[in-house]
Image (cartoon, rainbow, N blue to C red; front, side, top):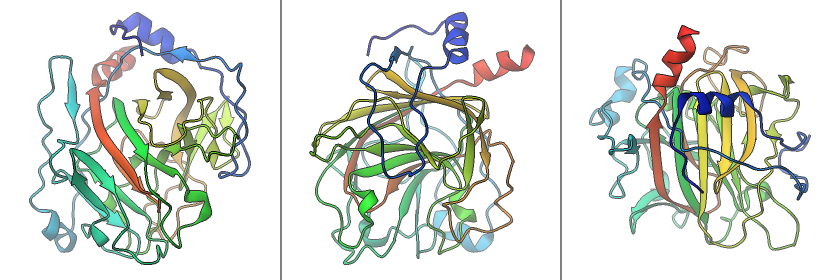
Length: 321
């Protein structure tokens, strides 16, 4: 991706111009072919926002998480911080369905060779143990970069639709507010899909909405997932995924330097998330911030980079207008 230096007026132009994207599909797992002629826009290297402090934690669930702090690592000279230090996941929370928050069942999320590796070799049957690894503090305005690759085989018992399927959740509820049996957090997902080697297009960088809705082309999206206009990526190649999140306003998905999807006004609503606390799901409430989480759905995957840059200055400029 060609790097472009951040200029406020240029940024505003980018955020106000929506990239062409595909029509929503009614089946979230049946991805329709991507138009080869779809326009792809290069995006400048904008960046992301350190968020608000975490919600209050009850005494019962805070004990195993007490060692975590709410401070961020220092930013580099360009303003980027590494959420993953390539050594451990001490700055992250684990929440896996059927297990309490903080229990990394089966060593699902592990750090090896400088990567977060998602593995299921200690599972047996998958048993709908959908999991997520959450960074310790929420964010609102930011630019996020995640580099991932699919590896290995789908775990026995995992749903067919999770084959070469994972993602990064954002604007997520606090994992400490999730009941033991909740499957997916109320959040928005940048969905990652890998090619199946069957010659059919399977775009990545899509949007899925567990317990949420988004506005797409001027109205609430009718489907649980929206396809991006990305290429199909086969095998175990690394893919660079980027999110530019502007609170409860515009959200942009970028794959390997190309803008592939845009939508706005993320809000609580819709279905798909199950066994949540009803007090948390306030339909229609706009989501302006939340936690970021890496997903485990039964497909082994590696994450080698998770970086974020603050865009809170842009938030202040927006408020003044």
